Image 1 (tube, rainbow, N blue to C red):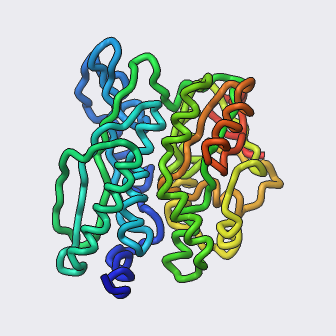
Image 2 (image 1 turned 90 degrees about the vertical axis):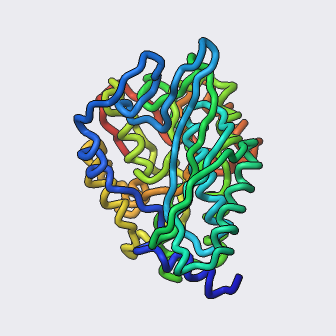
Image 3 (image 1 turned 45 degrees about the vertical axis):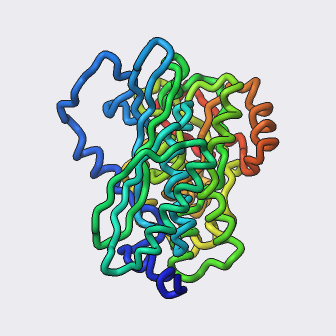
Length: 349
């Protein structure tokens, strides 16, 4: 594959810089009030707005199902495939489940890109599936003006061990497993402003499965969990506090971020998704006067294949962080706590 064909990978995408999602407000309006099918065995469905759906099969087994795909945010097709696959698998890990099967979802601009690009993307996805112990059982491909790739994933979980977003327990600590700022960094990569070192760091992080974090938290008293992706750190936390009966306090100085992302945020290099996230969820967030604007921007920054946000017993938080570090989850940090008041609010200090 020539260098020219690699460069054209993101050039086929309008405004590529991070994995763009439909603005959360638009999505909420589109789905609001729909008459959803019901089933007594559906434990977690669309009305819960959680990371994945969960359907009870028997007293001991439930299916965890999710789907995610997006356009490329990096120019190397193999790396893009790995990132997209890791991102799709993450929702199953966030629910406490074990992914087992997957199906490819592909939109490919055959008139713009050589078929070798598609092969490299899918090969990257297969590498990540092998890492996760997941088998590819099929898929669907269409021709489109823009390249998009992802997976539909099915996993398993015990019906009584499901982790959801809104089961917050007052006093528990919040533990984040990956650095924030990938959306800003990907925007800088697209603009040709990012050097090799930070580009490599962020790509490696996005390619890294949340499997080790999920395995680690299985041995601790975890009350809730989510993964941090397109709605940003604060957007996903807002999903947790709404209708939860609790609030969250965040120590902004403890949140792991890419220093380069802060520098670019100071320059105004902010992806549109960050503004969309703030517009939709900003009402749930209160910033202390001394929290810099650049920190606020990073906390709303849309992430691609971000880390898990684990809500764990305060007595076990340090031990879980230590276990994560031993497993190679080097960015793991305790970033806040669940509080009784104010309810349905996130206080960033």
